[in-house]
Amino acid sequence: MNVLRFSDLCAQGKVSGQRVFIRADLNVPQDDAGRITEDTRIRASVPCIQMALDAGAAVMVTSHLGRPTEGAFEAADSLQPVAQRMAELLGREVPVVNNWTDGVTVQPGQMVLLENCRINVGEKKNKEELARKMAALCDIFVHDAFGTAHRAEASTYGIAQFAPIACAGPLLAAEMDAISKALLAPKRPLVAIVAGSKVSTKLTILKSLADNVDQLIVGGGIANTFMLAAGLNIGKSLAEPNLLPEAKAVIEAMRARGAAVPIPTDVIVAKTFAADAPATIKAATDVADDDLILDIGPQTALALAKQLESAGTIVWNGPVGVFEFAAFENGTRTLAQAIANSAAFSIAGGGDTLAAIAKYGIEKQVGYISTGGGAFLEVLEGKTLPAFEILMQRAQG
Image 1 (cartoon, helix red, strand yellow):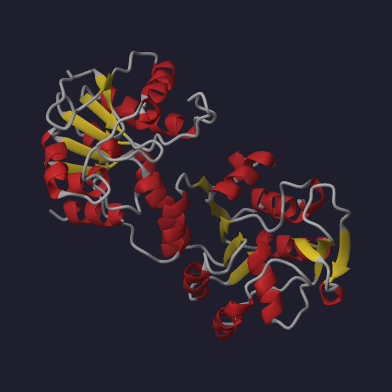
Image 2 (cartoon, one colour; image 1 turned 90 degrees about the vertical axis):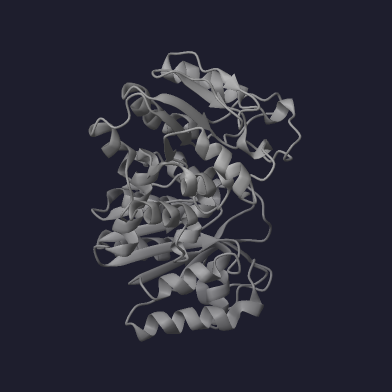
């Protein structure tokens, strides 16, 4: 994708003394006391901030946090806990600035954290007046928040329209590169794993991928719906019978291209949805009316793992079973290990997927782990994200 990159501006010496406004994604989980429980997004934002500071910029950083009400600031919405963690990571003081849209005082070599941007009236609806105010604060706008790249808001899109220079930060640029490598110019065969509880939430993704991938592996409740479409009994398993025509259409679209949606040949079932429910391996043709399918069977898992061995590119979104329960994690663990061992370029995204990657300790063996949930899904749907769109427009002058 043709966008201006902040790293290039720094390398060209065009950042020293400039006012740099970084839109980061610092929306981290917190406990009831406001303590940060997982800081991946803060750590991921540090390289861009450090790059700007090292280049001699006057640095402003902002992000949303939680779901505040515009125009009504509350202590629970504050980025203060984020500032404390960021100060530890950067080894420097990180002051938090309130009411910042009318002006910010920051010197070259210094940084400030601008309070929760979603408190500003007009942020979510991308009001032009607010976007222009933000743009007036800076000489260079840096979008480094892939997790918000699918939203056209004042701090993600509007400011990019009106800032003197608008560019992609290193985190956003890395996402762009990984997406291009996996979907726009993939090494074949291209295999996609799409799993989750409902076909309806990922139907457009399945349709889009059916036109492009060589193998489409489905899991979870989605696989149950596809099993129904193939004429198999799924007992009382989670499925969406009203979407059988859509599932059949995806199967036919793949078949027409000489590709396939593998239907499980064996499954792991239980009578109740519980961590201690007795698990039974059954042939896919032997599922009883009172069975719940909670994982793919070992035979299916090994067959799919073998297909992943020969893949050129793997896109992974969603665990294929209830991997949180030990009795029903074999399918997800087997595919995770196959992805880790594969020579293919792999890109993975989505909250449950990241949890599985962490559980099985394969972070270093996955080619790229996407930080954006909704944004990653929209890319898989074939959509052009607003952030990419506006940055590509600005790069063309």
